[in-house]
Image 1 (cartoon, rainbow, N blue to C red):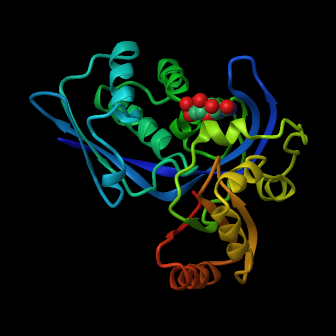
Image 2 (cartoon, rainbow, N blue to C red):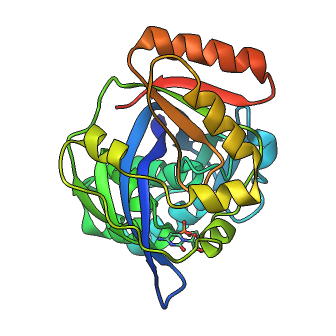
Length: 277
Ligand code: C5P
């Protein structure tokens, strides 16, 4: 028996920070979308619980340390349903601490896989509650569809997505702390996301964490400028608290050409050419 569950990368097409909250979080309005590619969670039967990591970013995570996959497994058992001993393999293809939800997507994929394993419906409220406790982005990742996120990101309203939209993700190899980037936000409420079609409201929007992230890691501004200079881009922005930035392209050919140019200029930067789902 092996269950394979995709853990797609999450992008914030826009991320508007509205207010600091008394609980230490920030009130947000954000546009979540997901990509075809990402990490993967594989679950198999075992004599005792095991957790292993494979894939290109294996070295950036310690399987023995506290992580969102084993926390998702443990909280599923505590709050949703009993699960027999299992071996979980996390295939880590997304850079860690990079604003594209890697850890959140992995936690959500673990919840979805366990729900399949023990026949819990995907829309079960207990799953959504566990997701919210695991992290602000985990409910959006659990749903895995284009949504407007409010509150700390967990209050979700579905919106028509942009399936097939070519996108290039670029990360310059610096990990930034989400908590630090939020702490550097200037406190100015620049307004919420508007109404309308996703691409229109994304383009009219912004990522309020871009300026504080660039101040902490100036190479992010370089990534944004280089993406903006590529031919055929229609939206360039940082995702989440960074450092990953993305460009939406007019078509696949422009995206492929842009990816090739970025890889030639910056062989050390991580690039992923994919599409939105
Ligand atoms: O919810 P999560 O654990 O993913 O959040 C990580 C950190 O990001 C929080 O500890 C907090 O500092 C910051 N954060 C925030 N406001 C949000 C989401 C996250 O301040 N809406």
